[in-house]
Structures are given as C-alpha cells and as structure tokens.
Amino acid sequence: MKRNRSYQSVGCKVAHYLCSRYRFRILITFLFAALIPGIHGCASRSDTAVTAFSTGGHTVYHLKPATVSKAGRRAIISAAYDGSVLCHTQMGKLLWKVKPGEGFPFDLAVADIDDDGMDESLVASSDGSLHSIDHDGKNIWTFKGNTPLYRVSVAKSHSDTLVILTGGVERILYALSASGKIISKYEADGVIRLTGSGNIMGEGQDFTAVATARSGLSGNYTLRLHRLPGL
Picture 1 (spheres, helix red, strand yellow):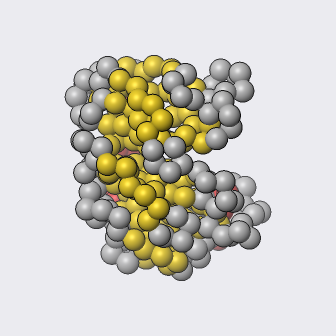
Picture 2 (tube, one colour; picture 1 turned 120 degrees about the vertical axis):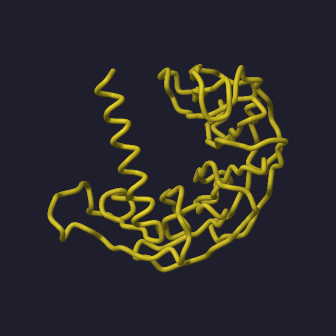
Picture 3 (cartoon, helix red, strand yellow; picture 1 turned 120 degrees about the horizontal axis):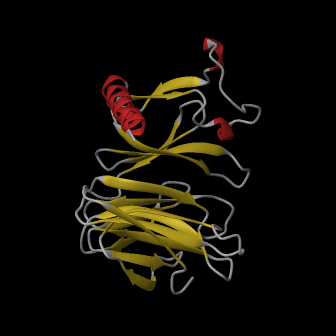
C-alpha cells in the first residue's frame, strides 16, 4: 500500500511539473502511436519523437485521437482549461478551434456516434452542459444538466447503436441518444466521478462501470457494474 501511495505521489508531482513547464505545448512522442502507421512503441533515443507544437496559449487538459475525414485522416482533439476545444493534424496544424461554452471541461470523449465514419467530440462541462461537436468543429447539440457534469463515455446498446453516458454532481447517470435526447436515467448513490463501458462480462453486450463518491472531489469511492436500462 505504501508503494502504491508513493507511486501516486510521484505521478502527481510529475503531472504538475509537466502542466506548469509545458502548459502551452503538446509534445507527441509515443502517447498517440495509433495516429501514425508504423509507430508501435517508444524507445529512449531522441530521434523517436514525432513533433512538438504550440497550442496557441491554451492549457490543454484532455487529449484524444480522432478520425476527422471520410478518407480516414487522423487528428488530435484537445480540450483546454478555458473551455476551448481544438483539432490539430498529426504535425500540429490547427484545423479548427471552438469554444462551445464557458464551463471548465471536466471530461472529453471521442466516438462516431452518428455512424458517418467520422468522430464526434463530447465535452462534459462544469456548467452542467454536454456539448456534441462534429468532426469539422460545428456544434451539433448541447444537453443541459442541472449541475456540473464530471464524466462522459460511450457504450454500445443491445441493438449495436451507441449510447452516450454522462453524469456528475446531480448523482444521475443520463443515457442519451446520438441526437442528445434522454433515453433513460440511473440514480447513483453518490457523485459520479468515473464511468467506463465495454464488453466486460464477455457476453457480447456492454456493461457500464460507475465510480461514485460521497462528495464532489473526495471521500471513499464506490465502484459498481451495471447493465443500464435502455441499453
């Protein structure tokens, strides 16, 4: 237990240092190996770095790889502290930048929710909004909750359609359609801090793991596995 705590402490210090030292830059070495064919790992040699580029003064909080064209072009979607969402090419060219709201982006998910072959970006915000952004940076829809949303993830339903899951301080996990409509709700026993979905049981159907806390950012966590109504 002491060793785990030590690792966590060191990890926090490293993360804090990187955020303060490189707050306006993205250094891409092995984090997004899936973005560029032929890169399968990381070596210690300096010539393995792909590129480094400026984010134009935006302090990036989340990063996700995404497909942004019918031809399969890959890009990097990022969400910044000021609420901006940016899309860069693999080599750092800014394709688009939007600011869908004024809230802090607590979470970012990327998935092809409308089955058009290109990824949409989903941003859960401190103002209770969940923003759906198209592959070209255009806002598709905004779901408005009552309190800050901490998490957003995507699960596959029994009919093979994708369902958007989001929740936070309100202690309700919403299941939304690709158009942002409420399919179902799940009342949690605490503030929703983490969600994750997948074929966890090996039954060919997605289950959702939900971690809750008694308060917003602290307290004991409870982890439960659910087959949610509507999925």
